[in-house]
Length: 365
View (cartoon, rainbow, N blue to C red):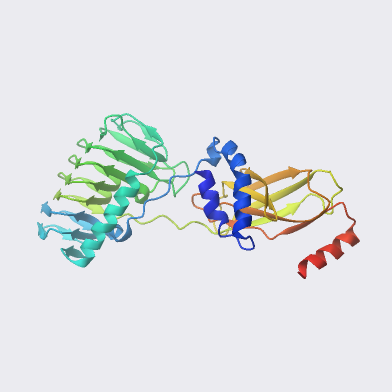
């Protein structure tokens, strides 16, 4: 997974040919496999794109039926069915689309999102009962193919507002009366996904966070609150005096800048040189995390994990005599865009006058 991510990031770097990129990635594989076991190197779970389905608080296929003063803060959609009942007394603070192109497109996008979430690699298999537990970001399945919540489930983003939680229930999701889901340490309802293989039932006055994507139906019983979406692919959504609010999206990944410094230049032949990359976010106080790849032209020198100050250092003593074009490429991480440093022209085995002459000649090519 880390290698794949490196491929996607480095492919956008200017100045390197496809052949050079292939060489870099071939050299990187061994290093990345060593790093992949560390927590910092594990690829973060990617968010699931809902497409136009993201506009809908409720989306169903056969019918939408409501009893009582339900409030939907978002759009209401139905396709291919046409029967939407109970509005009023229910209120939709958005657009109602029934059996029209917009609803059909939303259903198509829901299908794509459901399939993508269902195919996400499982991080861990956890017990069916989620109540009374705290879960960190990842993709989770249960041994029985079902999930239930009795009491409180806490989702802990560990300080990352882009953290993704995916719960894959091959069969059902059932929440008990009065149960609730709590988001802590930056967790966002927009990035919580409940992938339900058949049907979901939310108990009376329960509170759930996230996007419920059910293969069949969703029943939201009396007084339940959904900070998210109730999206049913092939059957009905049934409501009763509920509140459903489409969550606001998380912030876009922060733009980053990467700088590169060398410990000595020019450097004596066969002597250690330390290259230090510093990655900073363009806005805010968050410090980027993840990996930095150091290159010498088209040759990978090494991949280093950023420390808590956003720096990564690589020490090398095997540079050949001559001029080297050293670069640092921040591969990016959840919440942070990738970036590349300006090149550092490292001269090995020459004096400063020779360095200036060689560098000038190199820049005019």
